[in-house]
Image (cartoon, rainbow, N blue to C red; front, side):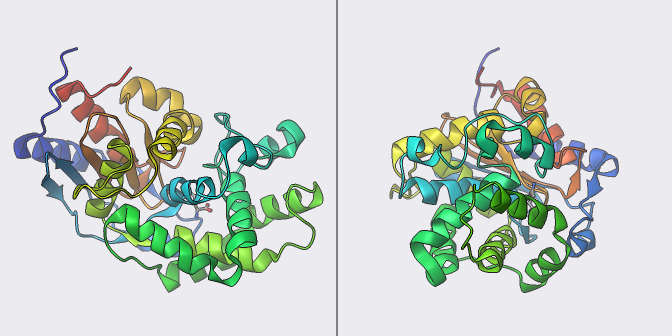
Length: 311
Ligand code: GLN
């Protein structure tokens, strides 16, 4: 298919209109009680292209970054360790199970989480970061996330508290990893989980995620030309987004949309191609895998219209 790669306002408006039609098919995450409060009718699309931003829908509505932060947590780990060093703690394999699967952890080689974008993998990553930065960890993460998003961000205390009291699955995964020796016995469990929950509770908008997408898609460089991350780290992140970014839906997503991407249960999806544009979507109704239902449909539409599929 011919690759046009030029977004227009008219096309974005059509995509959002389509996204709105699909909102009733998704379900807002309710396993974190605070997320239930989101308006399922919100739909947004943001693009940064040739130094220009194009927006459609509720692009200023704040929502929690959730699993999209796992990309940034792994990037921070890569600032400190090589991929091979990290592989002792967290793998690079796509996952065929839901993002909080206990069975997958049990069955994986040496019980190491299969990749950094499932919950167990992100918790291990946070544990590694905590070992390095200790009580400064959350501050370092907030600073680093802000660089990706292009503005200073912080987390929602309400979502953090809600996740902290309801997140039994993440505690199960953590204690299983302690039992198996994947996490050190002297781990400060509550501190590490708090950092993980706070990181997931960082508040963003669709505009912020388009900025993050731009950085990943431009080999680690901001729209203003300044470097955020090393080119090789950006390459590793894009690759993992392609194979693991939408969990056990990654194969379907690659066929439907064909752009590396990372989703979060807050409803955001960040893309990462090498085609120079930044592109992110938001709509809180999720499919059964935890990806934004309308978000996937909007990306599929744009991919077809503009020939964005990289495969
Ligand atoms: N904070 C969420 C959790 O731990 C993140 C999951 C997600 O966005 N897929 O379950």
